[in-house]
Image (cartoon, rainbow, N blue to C red; front, side, top):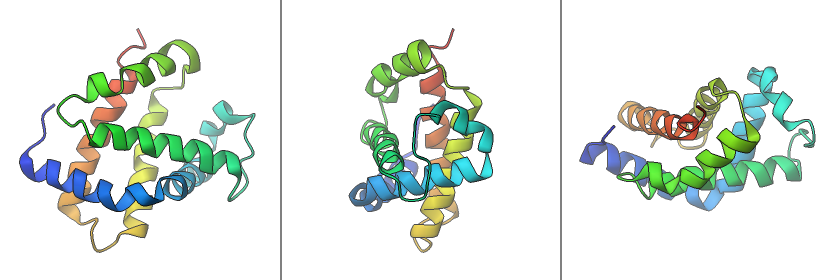
Length: 142
């Protein structure tokens, strides 16, 4: 999957807005995920899932920072996320369907925080981008 120059600009431009807020954007996206898709909580039984918890901020920040790593390596997402892909496939074994659900939660969170910037073109680029990220994360599940 390759990205056009316009898609790359939309992805990196939005990433520049998200980057200063990784923990809070990530925590909110996780809260949204757990509220809308409660079955995803099963992987986080050891976390405090209450609104604003340190666990949500910490893990949400890690998730969004990993997405940022991918956004900074649009031509080599596979290699940029290789270690994270190994972790998910060999140790965490998260249901691959959850990545699609998380992608949706992240996009909704972005739309809430950046309504003027998260237009249809940016949303389409990010949807394609997050599909690629999800694909890379589940690529080693076999």
